[in-house]
Image (cartoon, rainbow, N blue to C red; front, top):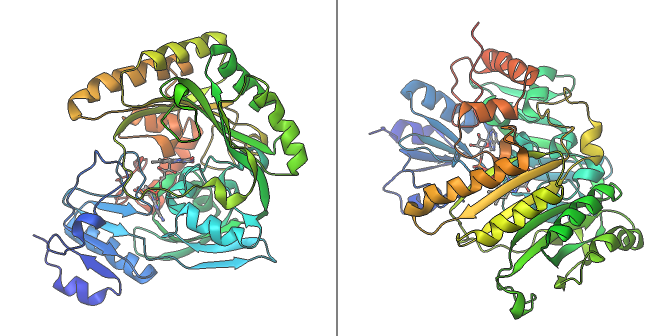
Length: 453
Ligand SMILES: Cc1cc2nc3c(=O)[nH]c(=O)nc-3n(C[C@H](O)[C@H](O)[C@H](O)COP(=O)(O)OP(=O)(O)OC[C@H]3O[C@@H](n4cnc5c(N)ncnc54)[C@H](O)[C@@H]3O)c2cc1C
């Protein structure tokens, strides 16, 4: 067993071991299928603590997990038998409204950051859920409600503070360590532990946003994608084809029936937003229409902290959702016996696509639609059946293309990680990995092993 007394004396943050009453809560991550028991969890207080934890991991050879918001689908925020470096206490947030930027500690969630920035009428786009950690989502890419208007979260990254594998604290931006700055924008946790991020803030006060429920016919699904693609960049949409959950605002006769739940935000003039959303509303009589002017932070509704689903997912990219694809989605979701099955379609483009593919480590700039097929399951015995179903529909939507978004990858094979970082991106990441983390200390992630020297 790891002796912790000397180490505990040296760190300012909190060391949590299996005997600690807070241990079970501290090792819990969003993915309820992950049940790992680390030897030690260190809730670091500052960058010096981060360096100490990295040194301890190197000296003991124990696996190091880096945890922000705990939402990695693969459970990379917790290690079996290793050390968890928990960033949850790094919650500083300095908003400089005049400069249009903020320095944020990576223990913050997207929701916490968005609420604080929203008080100034400002926002940085993250994803579709408030409980995701800002570190994990920013380092992966960040695909959310401001994507078409302002780009990915990485496109808002101005600077970062990072503790590298040798324990050094680096200030990284376009001028200082520009190679590392490139890698951090999409390359995930491969290069070190980011303690603070400086993110650009945009004026985003009231948006026209919320949920629109439409009956899911092939026509409507095809139409939702076409309308979202044709819409101005101010409109970003995330469409979920699923059986309607028993939500109070969906008429009871539609519970369990196939619907498209479109989550959308129009970041601009509200009347122009109504005009942009009109083609979606015209596709069919909405079953529920919750789209209204709202303060941007309300795009993240309150979450149940105990909500921890168990699911198989497969994310990818499609160049179109034509009639045949829409028919397959309807057939497959209708036929699924999973407790919940979803085909998620995110129309990309806009500002995201205007950044050159080699400007950051997120290279899939020209892909038009991000797909994510999800099947929840109730017992481990079901997993295989759900996985086969997910794979089947995902392959039909993507034509079997292994490319995907690193932030949505689960515990998959190297082919998938490589496909998230195609061609030259992989080569460049691997070369930088050899420079900054030659021993692959940061390996519990969508791992890019160091290139051979
Ligand atoms: C329900 C759900 C919804 C999601 N929605 C979206 C979405 O709409 N858009 C989108 O783009 N993504 C989305 N994601 C994906 C999510 O952004 C990534 O999985 C992200 O990595 C999670 O970050 P985290 O800090 O919460 O997770 P963690 O599990 O804490 O961290 C994941 C990994 O990221 C790395 N990491 C995290 N923080 C740091 C840091 N400060 N320094 C170095 N490495 C770090 C580490 O390798 C860590 O193991 C979603 C995920 C879930 C589960």
